[in-house]
Amino acid sequence: MSRITISPVTRIEGHAQVRIHLDEQGNVENAHFNVVELRGFEKFLIGSAVEEAPRITPRICGICPTSHHIASAKACDQIYGVEPPETARRLRELMMVGQYVHSHSLHFFMLAAPDFLIGHDVPAAERNVLGLVKKAPEIAKSAIEIRKFGQRLTEAIGGKPIHPSTAIPGGVSHPLTEEKRQELLAMAKNVQKIASQGWETARTILDGTDLDFGSVRTAFMGMSDNKAFSFSNGPVSILGEDGNLAATYSGEGYLDHIEEYSEDWSYLKFARLKSGSYYRVGPLARLNIVDRMGTDAADAALREYRSAFGNVVQTTLAYNIARYVEFLAASEKAVEYLSNPDITKTETRTPVGQVQQHRGIGIIEAPRGTLIHDYTVDDRGFIQKCNLIVATCQNNYAMDRGVEDVARRVVRNGTLADDAANKIEMVVRAYDPCISCATHAIGRMPIALELVEKTQFYSLKKEDSRIGSY
Ligand code: MG
Ligand code: NI
Image (tube, rainbow, N blue to C red; front, side):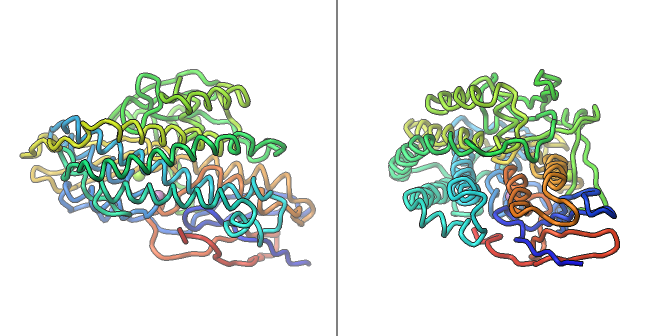
């Protein structure tokens, strides 16, 4: 019996494994996307003062800290019965914009681009960020400039470059100074220029790519504000598989529609609709839900995207382009927000008193999809119950089924086609899964792709190349 060694699953945020089970004939019996880390924050938070949650939850993840920070602060506003002043709402929104710019550009330029710009049939040793620097140095350089802006913005408004801490119950603790506004505005204009120029490349990345693999048919979920793209305002909509609006909800209404469940082979939870359908969140879902992005270049890009893929898109790899459309929108929003001097007004907090209600639910659209923080507190504001629902859990079913779809196409008689490993990775990567968020990770585990024969267990080459290095 031969031993097959293939590259590990790389260029995703965190650690995961793909295991393919074969039948007696060496064909695929089933395949799963496994996550081998342990969750914890829903339990750690119990007993904490709820006003600490916006500072604790960003620690869940170094990639999505702002999303947790803002969702948590929104939940706290409800518990203390306060509305943040307009300036605070804009500052929080601007932090979200910064997170989108940072996260989406990182994924597009560093994680996804090597597949498309270098070519997914090129050997893995060249198909990485270093290969990209060689093949398209201007793109690699742009990516670094964009990243700098994202970090500077989080630092200037959130107080720190990685884990922001300024969103507090009732608003934001520090106003933005005029000096910082000017500095950020200049950077934002540059980022917007890069984003607009990059669209010419982004819109073509799937040309000539087989779009069929990793496909799955699902419902979709995402927030919109009067049908426009939104980071944190508005109700959440659910579209059925047919693309028709099936339901909308806000606040605790999520429990009428979503149920979480576990499978014994993964630490990553799953979510599905109570109606029995499975659904997806994130860029693909949001673009299916909105009518418009609300900014010029992104709206033009959305029209092109729709003429290529249709109005309701099920194509998994289209996530990569949808993400770019959102990156464009975020870069334009950054300029818009920073151009308005009102954002430096100093009234950024509504005073907070006693606990007004025992339950607070903060829902926002994180770059990877709908994020829900649901806290129940006692009279003194100590957390008694906590439920977090993150994007990656909601996309878990689609990733898992997508992996099996590819496995069935690429495994024949116990052997993998040459491009098999990367095709599987591309499907997982399209969702930009954040394993840290989804498992609230403890420790480091390697990512591996394993082929399990009926009677034999092969643990294939395990290595941990670029994982978690950003
Ligand atoms: Mg949960
Ligand atoms: Ni994360």
